[in-house]
Length: 451
Image (cartoon, rainbow, N blue to C red; front, side, top):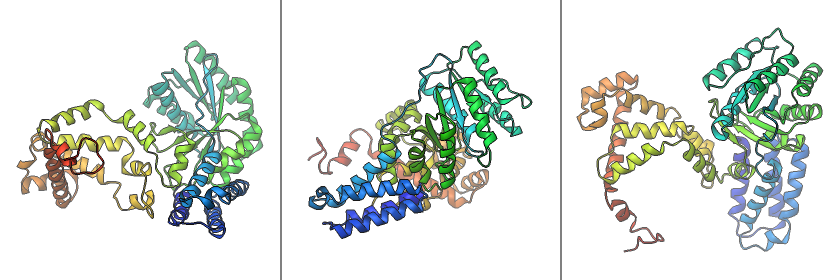
């Protein structure tokens, strides 16, 4: 996420951290490098100027020059300014309206509005317990209404009736009436986009807004759009009373400029961020956490929350009990673990939220791993019989060849997985009873673990 900006800023900050003392000249050089990093990330020039000036003013203050750890103080200044640019505090969705509360999504074609409508509907239903309906007013793109209907069906949320022959304003008004009859809590209205800004588009979305009077009017913007995102944000902010922004496609090779620019241009907070293609890949936007991720400090709190939401607690408890009683760690257990990592977005998503050492970025670390590895390992385990999964010791040469053929992979991949499993099983056996305590006893600084 935001690979270009993260890589450039992290490089600058790693250099600054390594200095025991900072001079005014060092600071000016670092600020110049920060400016270059922002420009390369497609941040809007007015935002760059304001950002850099704020960092320079604070960094040249006595706090940095007199500090015993000047590099760390400079890093904190950049972090705090990133938080300021991204928006102070987390802005939740506002549903304080007579039901149904209407959420209007606006933006350019290709920004991902329709998929975002489904993601938002699922979020509101599963996280907030709301009864949600969706409607498409996009009569310009023939497949838009069908796409929304299929997405609604996939998440078991009602798609309210709409026909391409109807006027968009009439569709929206009819959907609002239907939502009231069905006693829905929230109605999400997806609007048409265009490949470029034009007066008819803005006029249409203004009229739809007037017909449904939304409590939330959210600008949906592609994270990878760069300066186009800034121009679109400015036009929509002038045309509509926006209440927030949703950033999409943040899992792509996004430079990060849109994230730092749209809040400043629209004057409204970023409320959600789309982190993948799956309908579950929508997260509330936390400016402080995103600032930490951008400068390579990770988002451990976000990772913990994600694990709590998506990891099967019952399976984890059963595995813990098995390990404690020394019952072994079979391939059924390993497959459960691999599937749970996949449900968290895979290794790339986990790395993106982890603090990284100096000189390393999430992009570089992910590049050293094969993103298909987890799926291949799951395929190998699925090719085993139930008996083989429970008793890996019976897997001989002929069984290995059969398993490899069933998974469509070389025998070497099967051998590698068997070796990894054997190593994991050995570690698990050491944890039996008080084994974990004995393993940790020699580590300094752990209470109750001293000899």
